Length: 290
Picture 1 (cartoon, rainbow, N blue to C red):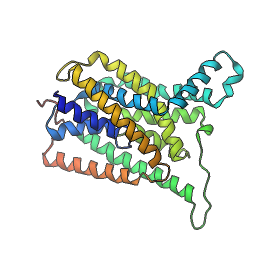
Picture 2 (cartoon, rainbow, N blue to C red):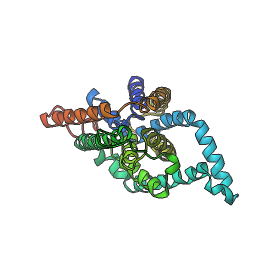
Picture 3 (cartoon, one colour):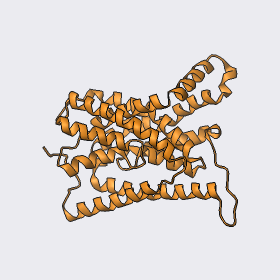
């Protein structure tokens, strides 16, 4: 991998990680469209450490408060009803599904799941799901001609059941094209949470899963066509760009619809199917290139 490739892929990772459009799919597609070799699951997982570092800095006050309350609750029973202490446990519970499935499906994640036809399918299907969830949230927030606005849930209403359901949604993102934020935010909206609450928990829930995945894949870094230098460079680029994107996205969702992302996902999925069908791209484009 050249330094230019690592710069572009780091930029793509930073731009797409927090948007509900799938960063892993865009890394895969960027390489395929450019005629580069697929950067692979290890490169993707390690560069995501950069974007998660951006999450940790952006939510540093929330994270510090949660970790402190959770740690103290281990020794002081009366603190176990504190919201921040409970959030610590809920993040742990929500991380179980992706941890189990990530290890179980490792070979599929690095192979069959990177098929462009599967990516096109997940882009479209999850785009439709996000669109439905967004419309339901908008209906509750604004009401209608014959119905009053409905109060949606905040993170203070988060239960173990909901935390586990969030975790199952996050685990779906092991398939490129699903989108970690897209799946968890859609799940949160369908469970009745506000857009901001769904996004906030989605980002907090991703921290242990992404960091663990990145550390797990470190052993495979530097192998094949992707060396350590470009991987670290891409990770730094992803961190810088990701921090700017997450700040913008949290402001965007407070008063905007997810429909632009829904339309983008569906159009990209259709275009990808058309290119594969026409023979312009093969389902495994880039896997043996360069």
